[in-house]
Image 1 (cartoon, rainbow, N blue to C red):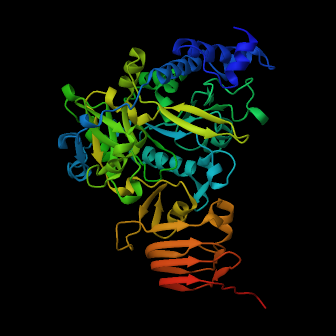
Image 2 (cartoon, one colour; image 1 turned 90 degrees about the vertical axis):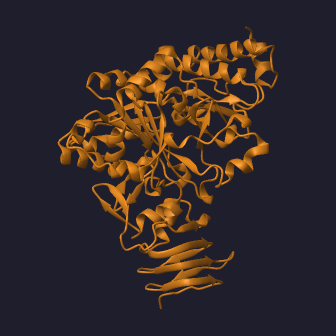
Image 3 (cartoon, one colour; image 1 turned 90 degrees about the horizontal axis):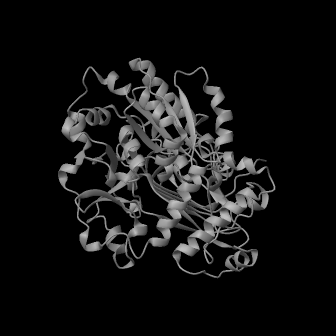
Length: 505
C-alpha cells in the first residue's frame, strides 16, 4: 500500500477504521516475512501459516473488544457442587485399576520461560533447585517413578517457546535411558505491536541483536492451538491417551495426583468431566491470583486484568473470593480437538504492556490456558491443599525449597514431618539475593528453618554454616554496612541491624 503510508503509520498515526488498521498491520507482517534479508522460504519454518492465522484472529478480536469482558453484577460464587473438596476425593480411595487410568494420562509442562528474572541464562527449567537437581530433572524423576511403580507409560510433553526450544532439546539427551518418553512442541511466535501505531515493531525475521525483542510467545493459552498444530495431539489420542495434566514447570507441588486422576476418570458417562482446575484457599499473598466464578451458568476464570477498577479491592478480598487458580489443570484431549476444530475456545485477551530497551512502548497480546474452562463440558474445580502450589519465582522461594522444610523423594518435595505448622514461612530476601549466583554465594549452607515463621533480609548480608532461624527474624544491613551471620548462630525472634563483620586473622 506504499512505503509512505507504512512509514507514517509506524510514526504513530492510526489509520482509518478497524478493518483498515487490521489489514495494514497484517500486510506489514507479510512484507517483513517475505522481504527479510534471510531466505524468504525460511519463513515457513520460522513462522508457520498457522501461526500467522492465529495472530490474525487474536489481533482481530483485540480490535473488536470494547470495555471490560465481564459485567460485575453477573458474577456469582461458583456452586458448591462444582468445587469439590480434595479431602472428600481422597477419602474415596483408589481402585485396583489405577494403572489403567495412568496409561490414559499425559503430563504436559509449560516450559517457555527463561531464567532471566533470577539472573540465569537459558530456560528456567534448568536452574538447580534441590541437591543439584533442576526443575526438569525433578519432573523426569517423578514420571519415571510412576512408570516403574505401576508398570505404565505416562509420557512427558514440554511446551517450549522459541526462547527455550534449542537449549531444552540439547538437555533432553541426558534422559535417553530414563523410563519416560519425552516429546516437545513449540508455542507460536507472534510480533510485538507498537502501542501507539498498533503496527509490528519487527523489521525482519531476525531473532538476534536489535531484533531480539520484536517477537514473543503469546502466553500459555496458546497451548491448545500449538498442541493441535504440532500433530502431537492426534498422535497421543491415537495411542489411547485421554487426558493431559498441565502445569507450570516451576511449580514443584504440581505432581500427578492419583486421587484427582481417579476422580476424573470415574465421573458418570453422561456427565464426563472435560476440565478440572485445581484451586486452593487464598491468602493475603495471593490477592492478585485469578479465581473461579459462576458466569452465565458456566464456570469461568476471572483474572484481575478483567476486573473494573471500581471493583479491584473487592476482587482482592479474601472473604468474597476465597480461592485462586494454581494453574494445575486436567483436560480432555478429545475435547481440545473438538473445540479447536470448531473454533469455539474463546479465551479473554490479556494485553501485556512492555517497554523495550530503547524506550519504545509495545503491547503483546496473550491468553491464559485456564481461561478456556468455560468452553469445556462439565468443568469442575478441585480445592486442593496448599502443598500443590509451590512455585519458585524468586530467590526467596528458592531458599524455601532448598531448606530442610522439605524432603525429596522420587523427584517430589513434601513438607518435613518435623515442621509443626502446615504453612510455609514468609520469606523476603532483598535485591542482593535476586540473582541465583549471588544468592548461593551468600549462604555457606542453607539455614535450619523448621521453626521459622517470618524472615526478612535486606542489604549486604551473608550466612555462615549451620545457622538456625526461628520465629520472626529480621536482618537489615544499611547502605555501606555489612552483616555476617556467624556459623552455628541461632536467631530466634531477633532483629539484627547495623554492621557485623567476622574476619579471619
